[in-house]
Image (cartoon, rainbow, N blue to C red; front, top):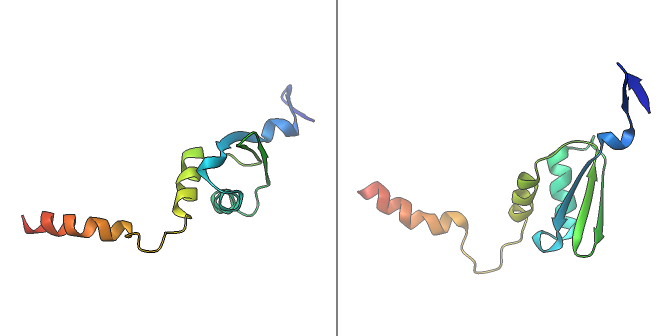
Length: 97
């Protein structure tokens, strides 16, 4: 514990704690997305309990961005159209009008 201007700061105060339900991502996907989001210099720990990932991280992060990154890392099923393929006909129709 360190003191600065009469304020006590413990290491545990510097830890960001957040939760993510396991249906949102696999453990591997969550770990990769978290590492990409907070960078190599940040330390984090992920534990799973009762279908919830408990995340402790030494650096603040945006949970919504983490979830978007997890969705972006999902594998596309064969035969599933890409996002751009779905929008292309609509864009062409907008450009012609």
